[in-house]
Image 1 (tube, one colour):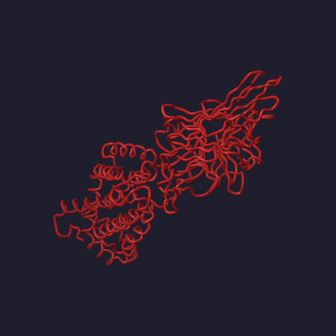
Image 2 (tube, helix red, strand yellow; image 1 turned 30 degrees about the vertical axis):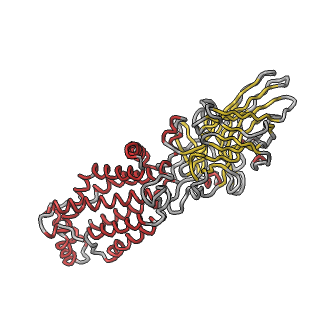
Image 3 (spheres, one colour; image 1 turned 180 degrees about the horizontal axis):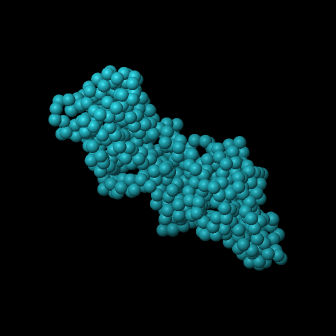
Length: 538
């Protein structure tokens, strides 16, 4: 029984380190045929919508002039060649390495991450085509709710095209529209594509010790949310929704997401490998027939900002970009409670402490039962040792004698394990809720901790956590197996070193959880102990 309990404790701790690797291997929905590197899936009876028309020659961002748009939350750079967003700074979020600088979500300098769009049709501008723009930069002026930027494509003999960006105050959504005037003598039926181009590799907020997913993502009301790893795109293992008329597609990383959103209507999703380490994710929309002398309009919205559960108000399923993993159903309400506590105390560190205390109180009856069972097991430990010596290697007689002893002493051998098993999913979910919450990014706690999403600069919390684990090991009976005993002695040191590289918010949660567990175990053992043998001693 003690061996099983020790294994469960060790396993629940290790889960913090490897659970994310499981999260990155979600089962992929079965939908459509495999894609090739050069084209996405072709859909039947819609020849005007085909990602194969976006050829490989469009993979490189052309050089051109620069137009800067500044709002209360964005600083965007638009390239006049293609009219694409080549840099996007989030002014209300700070750089992880230099808090004096804004966080750069998109760029094409240190690593490529840009938003492109264009039209499909003879003589229509792609994301490589030149655009004319008014001189000067744009800024959202005080008292104004939005700023509009109109880019005019070089006119052809048959069409006139304007690309229109609309930035709104206080919103991370950018409207991107095309107005297409048919100056020819015959109707035209163009399509528009909107895509995100990203270089594979670690994002600014990733850690080797706390790995998080970076890659593409797609959502549809039928297929729901699925992550699309760059490695799966490269290996042609991606399956996207067939004939979708809702949802979104984008790129996600730790704390942030960018996604193309459109209203209900037919579209084609696609993902591609463009270069050695460059990938795209996008969608194609039909503009519809435009008669001679008429003007057609097509638009999409680009969300580019923090990943938050409230994003479901912007688009269904967009809140799932907050990656709580396989315990989302538990992690989501835990974060809501933590947010509610933050509304009272205005400190995310204190909110983490209070939430951990509340969970411990809820599970106190289960924890008490577990500790009482462990105490009973300790009282019969000498008898169990004699039984082991008596029967030696005869496993059948040994197990029979042990079960008889449990029956005589009225001990349930699983009594200490089942309560632990029930609590493990809740605490793992709380772990992911803390890890995935952008609200903790650059959130101070107290004293030397100025950012709960960064490591403790002086490693004080990891050391406290190691001490708390050492105390816990002293409170538990020493395992009879020498190998297990050495393992339990080494665990506080191992995990202290590992937690040196964990975000301070996660270490704070672990410290509080350990301290409360020690207090609970001491209280229950003292209250329930009737003899000297039933009490734990340091």
